[in-house]
Image: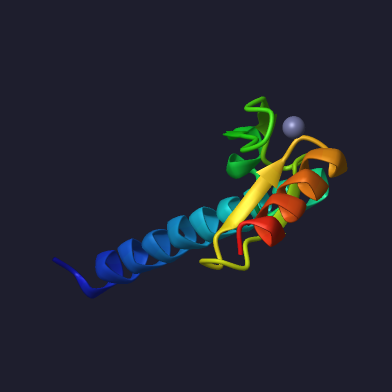
Length: 92
Ligand SMILES: [Zn+2]
């Protein structure tokens, strides 16, 4: 193999690499433009309200950190959240 061929191959490889990198960064830019929240895939998860047993989308649910075991609980409304807090106080 002649040295010129090696240089040409090296340049082609470099250009291909640059194309790949620019393609990836372009995809990343598109993503930020859509302004997808960090917990995107988590948003569709349904969790059960421990008070009324309704299924609530995790992103819309009201979060409460349980004082008993530091577990994060999710409620459909503030009403259910307040009910749970009251129960937790009563059970102490
Ligand atoms: Zn509820």
